[in-house]
Length: 576
Image (cartoon, rainbow, N blue to C red; front, side):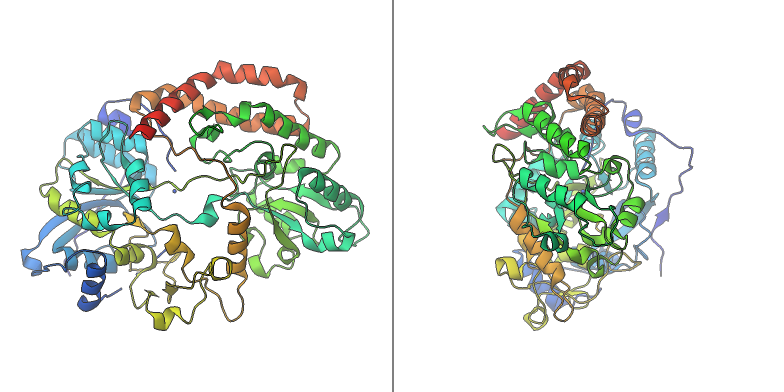
């Protein structure tokens, strides 16, 4: 078989940046889930018709035009040339794909792309690489990537993109429209509500039952319960070894920083998951900094009291994932209350005896009655860019749009229809839906063979556009074995307790190059300062009487400039 892929090796000493390569300045932060084989022509035609398109005129391989795609090589992809997704695209889009394999490490791949763009060498037709909004904008402004606006707003040119539901299409368009009004990229967008509220708090129900307490519903009730946890030997080993509340640093774990859960009883905070922690005021129009509010200070004061009384574990500000798991695994269990994104932090997960003592606790009402969850919006991830050297832009757009056909989007994530996944009632009727218990949504997507987290030859490991809605996610297979429905029950419980407990969310802001350059250092410095100051205030290493100096330092760092720039970006997005 002819080997189409061209492997590019990048020296470890190469560190040419995007901006150096394109002759501009700026920086931006970007935000970001599964798996594939042979689909019969009849099934493909049926799926295409369902999606609102027409069956492809495949033609012979010798008649096909070639489309060159640059893509970082993923160790979990066996062979891009013979990959099922590749052959599916080739057959249905009547195209021959040729791959330019970039380095696996994303920074090395970006450096290689920058070098290619700045050296004047002929670029591949398409770049399938995860890029930030600013990187996309800079390449677009410098003429490396071409605008796609006319195609995406033309239902005949991009039928699958325009056939998706309004919510998904609008979310993708909002994200991929650069600050200059042009669209230079296509995106992967597959939101999962379980991941939108990672700071879930779990409380030891066994201990509550032993001591005669109910699950707390307010911050004051939590404090009373924790006092009992710390002093009444609920694990029954005769040793005062109980830790009432613990967690782990946000940089080392996912959803495990308990102060973010507690702070949302005082003021909404997205857990620094987007926009450097900025949010919208109650009017839904004004950008604010929650970490500079009086309510934030009140939250710090409450946590400082917990720490001073020995109820809040100060090691959570330094504990890494390995230490965290070791703590959770101790026998007998010594943890009473903990914030974790998922049960995988306990060894053996759902089967861990320690984990089985816990149940999810709803957001707690604070002094003013607020009970928010640290929620953030799913951001589309930018993956598909057509370069200035593409000789057949219509063909490149046809392939890009093809990814948005529903069955193809499922293939990019789960693998081959009928082999790895199925929507056939004969298969789905055997399965339990992920949200069947909570929302009454039956399984509509059965997973037959898991093609994720392993070397496979079914898809490109999600490095391409796609769209799967929240409803698609909720109707997927819960992977329940026998009568073990714990996975589905816990996700459903999380949905009930956390999903809608937030004010209007500030969407991820798209800055111009000039705006991003102006606030890049400010945003980074402020985020670092807020996190470190939170730890200092809570542990008592910095007295709360120093609050005014904290606010003054934020202003000195440029907080007002950050807010003004964010407001400008938000107003611009809201007007589109």
